[in-house]
Length: 283
Ligand SMILES: Nc1ncnc2c1ncn2[C@@H]1O[C@H](COP(=O)(O)OP(=O)(O)O)[C@@H](O)[C@H]1O
Ligand SMILES: Cc1ncc(COP(=O)(O)O)c(N)n1
Image (tube, rainbow, N blue to C red; front, side, top):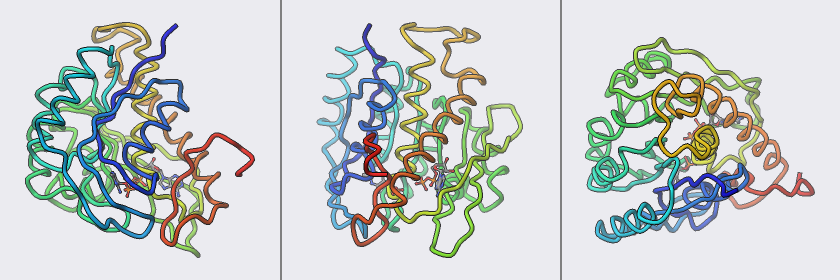
């Protein structure tokens, strides 16, 4: 039997921690076939982003068309889109599919990966059609256009139409206590609910947000299985509340396990990569 197909629309990270590298490794570990549309090439390491080259819009569009004409895409995950024109393209050509939107605006290292026009496009066209979006606290503030506690921001963004999980990555620093992380999930029309999981004390966490949203997309694709178009209310509908909650729990579990692995590593001079290996001998 063929595996579910998950499509990542994202940028590359030359250091192999975030972006397409994280997405494809995660899809593969969770039993999915990964396809990819590259939106931008970054020269990036564990310390910073050195350069960004955006892929021309017609080449992004050609990649999207090639994939969807040939493969039965179950779920689409978006990462760094890089420009408002690419956000519009994704909404236009992929908005009918279950979408997990990681609204990448700033890298862990502090580099800006999406400007004000990208923020506006996410708000206006992509979050309303997303099955689930996964902003971290800083991204949630930018998208909501205001400050506030994560639960309130999740509720405000869910009013745009799609479910939202505001992630609570603590940007752990040596000496911090990291007993647990709390993400806030809000379904459209619902109340924000806390989802807590164990925290891992590590600075080896570059790529964590990409890995989390990819694990979510893979879990939703597994829900969908081989049903080409499960309707609302079907147990195979990846937009159902049950599917979204269990995908969030599965993704947090995966990220915690991969961070536990990378917590003993010393790769790079900055915040090292979250583990994308399955070989436990490197634990
Ligand atoms: N040190 C950590 N230990 C355990 N889970 C973490 C840790 N850091 C982040 N996470 C989890 O990883 C997921 C992605 O979160 P986050 O780090 O906020 O994303 P981003 O990389 O976009 O800032 C969330 O579920 C968050 O709770
Ligand atoms: C190409 C690309 N996509 C996404 C991120 C965000 O990942 P992180 O928040 O871990 O820096 C990144 N740094 N680079």
